[in-house]
Picture 1 (tube, rainbow, N blue to C red):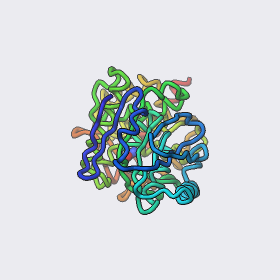
Picture 2: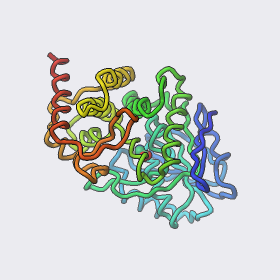
Picture 3: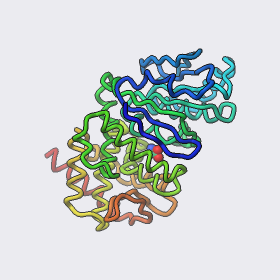
Picture 4: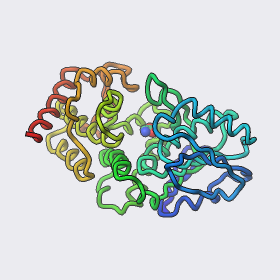
Length: 341
Ligand code: GLY
């Protein structure tokens, strides 16, 4: 088992990565815990044994379940069962479960401990690490939430073998991102070490900027266009697939702005293609709409704002001229057309 510390002073915790990590649950529960509320979805199909009295609380399926209504249902269920602050919530699933159950844990009794048992690649390398919890509103994704660090995260790589291929691919998109955030040679590592390396990078970033006042925003590399594509809808893209396209777009844009050269753009294309992920804009993408959505991004306090590669590495860049964004999108579309002709 690989153990990665997330150093946050009194709120520090460990992420355990490896085959069978889910069986370490009892070991990581806070001392004295009497009961565990296990929150999961039927489709997750991963059973855990907390080793203390427990009850399973099932959430509905899909991203739609990541809602305030689910948080209310969970909290009411916890209350009826008599869960106290001395107990624990155990979230078993992908990002939808860890985000929602994490937020319910943050809010219930003004905060009960939570352990994440991450069962998707995406949750293992991103969503379950770092304490961002929250739910969607009809007006947008992740608009209500809290920073609530788990007391431990278990990343069981054994359960990844049963993930549907596109769900796995979605995690690879987040993994590809880490290749540009300091994880050289990631592709050559065995899976456990690869997941652990991503966790290490995320842990270091979170330890330095827990509340995202600076460097943490770099974890959103590739996400500005990805979120716009997801919000625009109409494209059959999983989150990580959209991130893969977003990474290549960000590289194109950085090149236009003179921040990186063609070789570095090609490296983005190589990494993304190496994971079998898409790098082209989906057919029929509406550029105007995408730019409008990108301008509404949470980072965009100051004009069009992107996370871009450059001589000093990946960083947040504000006030990017609209003409360059338009040109980078147009260049992506030309590539798409050239490939399909
Ligand atoms: N998923 C980005 C972050 O946790 O900051």
